[in-house]
Length: 372
Ligand SMILES: [Fe+2]
Ligand SMILES: [Fe+2]
Image (cartoon, rainbow, N blue to C red; front, top):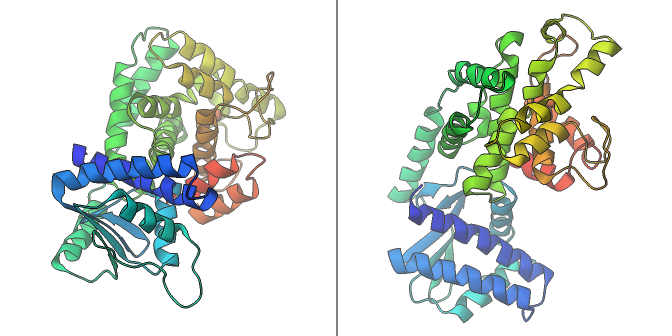
């Protein structure tokens, strides 16, 4: 991602929260003003570089200038929703814009629609309008198609991961360097792909399931983290936590995972030890971030505190563990097991929706559903 693209993305996040703040607080409220000032500064910075900047929506997808924004999430959905309510297809900003002009425009954009009009009009340095199919738009369409075709394949990571997991299991692994490289590779694939679903590694065998599932949970958790605005080292550490969440399964008897048919209570009790085993293993690797240890321990603790291991402290599982719980459940149910059938994408999401607030953090789940 170029610096310019990062700036434009920062602006979108700030713009979205300015719109929300306008609906929550009065125009004079310091939170509204501070948020507007931040968005305006980011916008001015972009306009200084390139003179104009356009946000447009085409078939539920947001474009920044000619580029489609490939990730959805609560922030982007908020902007798309405002476009829909106001009947807009594009907003273009031009250099020379003043703070008052921007402030009034965002305030109007945030207002609910009254009968008889869109209530939002162009201003000297802000043009609103219907998107027409110019040459530029056709280029965007073509880019979308190209991106859809270019899906990286991550199955080769399985072999690499087997070696790394073995190193951690035998306490011979002292650095998280290789793991970070894998996370960065998956993150790059995610940025280039239209949907995280296109990147998921298909189930091949129960022998390889731990590794394909770990890669998938990493991808889905990175997608959540990106949509929520996590960046830099924290973003990578969240990916690492996703990749390592089930490593404790290495300490569980293989026969249980390979067993065909329904598991006995003792076998389930054995499986339920994997979060603690995982945390113990990861604690021995000095460069593994603390959050990976915590989420290995907590990923089967539900939002309401039930699940396993038994929670011995007050409060919710960590925010990252809550994200991993969502990714983990989704990927697990998309795979057939000896004791249950594989569910389709929509079936899994409906089932998860029923468990919103009990098994899953409702806000994180709502954001997760919007990723696809
Ligand atoms: Fe697990
Ligand atoms: Fe898992």
